[in-house]
Length: 290
Image 1 (tube, rainbow, N blue to C red):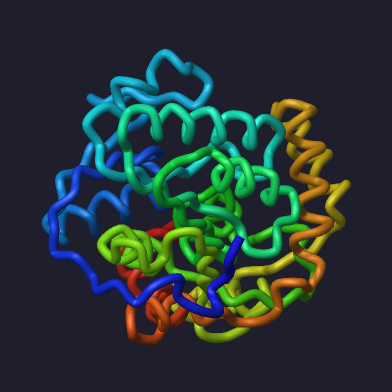
Image 2 (cartoon, rainbow, N blue to C red):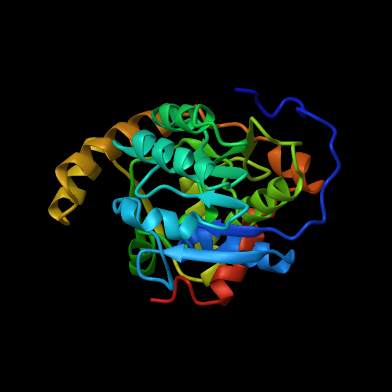
């Protein structure tokens, strides 16, 4: 695999409109990729388990109808790109996509997640004409739309991140990068592009910014990964998924991601969106209203 250190070619960006399959189109990244692709003039095939275009990673019978006729596809594997079964599923889908004439696949991956490398390799070895991996840091929107929201609305974030630093990335930047990569022809083919926010914050810092924006106190409570996993088990999360998440938290949140990446600026020619701006917008929209 090549990395984001240099282009594979200097082929100019194409203005050709594409038909783009977006998996997970109702999710945090997929919904933004669909929106950005439409804004760029592409035809979007918004796929989800219950949408008009049905797509389910666990039901391979849904794959062909979603893929057929698409020029490109955005792949967001659920529940996580490094989860057990991800490499097999992504590889199988990519091979099927190649046979159906899909020319470019962009896989959302996670920066610093060793567990995701097998999935990335399965894409690279699939035989698809062009592939690109976009490795993202922790999403800013995980605080406003994901499983952490209920705790924040109640006044407390309990999470196994210690005081680790992370450059939280706005998912709209991920979407803009994905669409630009698809429009760039061969330029990002066979490449890994790493994207992050512009500055490092701890989870405690992030909670403090949210607290200031909504005008009420919030508490950050760091816990161990095992303790957090026990709470997930109590909430009914399957044991296999809990064990994977414990491993993921123990590795991915060990400080390895305490650096910024230049993928947003490289691909888009601008700085990443600021975390403070995201917090202000989300607060105005009532994301953390109790």
